[in-house]
Amino acid sequence: MKIAVLFACGTEEIEALTPVDVLRRAGVDCDLISVNGEFPKGSHAITVKADAVVEDVDFSKYDGLVIPGGVPGATNIANNKKVIDAIKQMLNDGKLVCAICASPAVVLANNGLISGRKVTCYPAEVFVKMLNGCVFSDKNVEIDGNLITANGPKSAMEFSIAICNYLGVTPNF
Image (tube, rainbow, N blue to C red):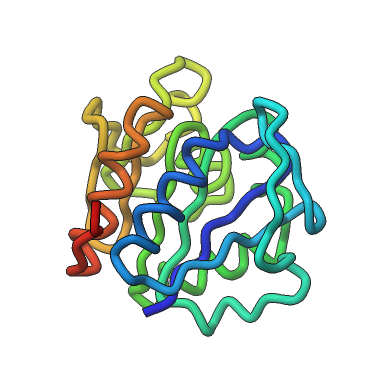
């Protein structure tokens, strides 16, 4: 089992690094993939070293994808055609797609990828309005088939545990 976690300049660090940490504790092969070079800087000025850059990644080798939020991180991810094509393919193939905070709206809904799906996102009006065609849930974490969404940094651990539960793995804490 192999999961890709995206990271872009402006990504909310807790929403990216918590899933990486929890998935690795559960024995999942998990790669941190940067959309903006090898050393992207998150929304709180934390620089991370990516395992790979998006240009060098074959997303078909992954069983799932995690899309953290953050501003402008979500926009940087949403503007990457290779990533959007990979998400579309994963959703069509029934693979796991997870998005948190702004990303369900900015990355998924704005690209027309989740129409009709039940999702949550950061509860700011601007993001909720972007969920046009989706069914908005006010839960911290929402699961709709192969799509897991969460509402923001406060739910990063719950989101990560939901991903593990979906994959049938247990993190070693």
